[in-house]
Image 1 (tube, rainbow, N blue to C red):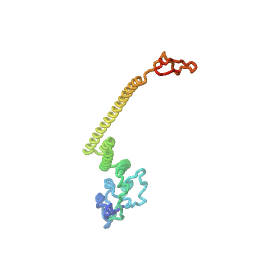
Image 2: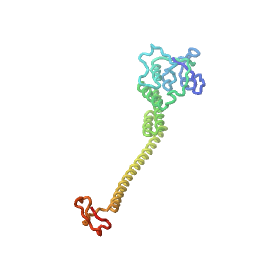
Image 3: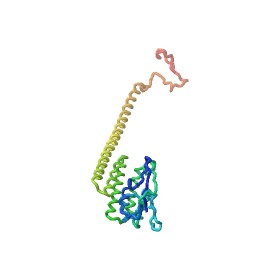
Image 4: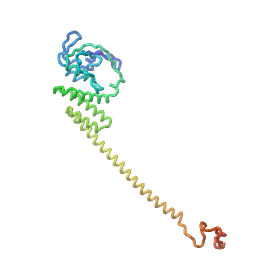
Length: 275
């Protein structure tokens, strides 16, 4: 058993029925009214619920004796109640109350509204779990699941493309094509592939330019150092010529104080003696 519910939107307005606004698929359930507001589903609720999840956690009422081995899915952190109700309505009859029995407040800072990229990824994971959980779906039911998978993978590819992960986006778009083939997704996959190839080519060109510039700088530096060394050698030989030994004088470093030699004033150019 489930029911309609009212909600307060982000602008503070009260909306009296989610079935008439956000989830019109709930009105597609064939039913019989047994009371002005009490309805019994005449066909399996599974098919309708597979197209769109519209049973809120706060409105679901389950008879414990009908649960059997059905439990909350393990390892699923997004829309896990959807998988729970899908298991339940597949094995038992259902009904609903066609009036709001609770009030939900939309919060701007909630995780479901602030991290939409994360929600898309986790929703795709939930759909993959759904596909594994119900391996005996009919062709029409499997087509519905494949469409959900393709749409979520397409949104993931768009998000990856906006983040600059063009190669990953291209692969994700190809994955969406494996779920459902459509011309729009083929075109988008080609666009991502083209953008990825152009970006990769430009990146390689930049890397090659950096490598060439680095090699040129190293070669220029080596040539400059060689020229500087050669110039320094020439300048040193000009400023500091190699000292030639004079046979007419005595080097101070080799002259013993006790054996000083006196030189005539005419031979010393102003010096009186060398010691």
